[in-house]
Image (tube, rainbow, N blue to C red):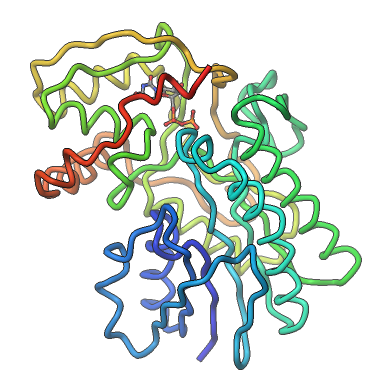
Length: 327
Ligand code: UDP
């Protein structure tokens, strides 16, 4: 039986990875410090003998007994509101946390996959974004703490690959959605669905002509799984190229939820990328991967999940739009 360490395991993507690796017959060590993660995302695994939860901050030294075959580093605040609230932790988990985990990978002879992001492309001047594009990032803007931590993470990962021959994989994740997203993480899908469910107007930032391309979580997990098992060490985009404006997306959510609420407009946050669409030619060729779940299908499943939350959870929104990410 192979051992895999998953960091950020109680988060949205981390918890889905835990499910997948348990299902594939791995022994999963699930690590999280629960800053943005939630144990309820993995509580269904708690009785499984091949699953072990460890409460630890990966920015501090990590000790794991026994052998380790794979490490998947998914610990990080991941929404603009989160990383604005906890900017230093965001920088530390991407930098110090990655360094600790690479050291662990080296010591154990494990293969390590890091969760990078489309944010390394910043507000992109190349469209759709290919892996060769270097990006257009403002290091000192509000998103800099996340974007630059992730860019550093890629750099140190490649350095360990080159200088220490650690086997590494880099996935650049584009906007992903699905069950277990946090209703109050500030991101557009939980924001809109939460607003519809609470009977509030939907807040579109700017004119809503900025675009995103949304990938359903199961598709993403499949892409990551294939990348981990591949022999390709350079970054690979994983996402769904089906691009939509935020205004059209708000209208889709209104239709899906049947809400009678309207759209209201708020200021566009600083450095909000105007367009985003992954070029997935590399994933198609190297991994024979492409997304299978349409937005219509994926949104339906996700809406059912959010509808199933209780009223307390629904109302537990600590911030409304956090003044569109503090000016
Ligand atoms: N957005 C919006 N209303 C909201 C939350 C977000 O119009 O209540 C917009 C945001 O300005 C951005 C897009 O939706 O253009 C996606 O934002 P999100 O935070 O989900 O992710 P990002 O891709 O910007 O990291």
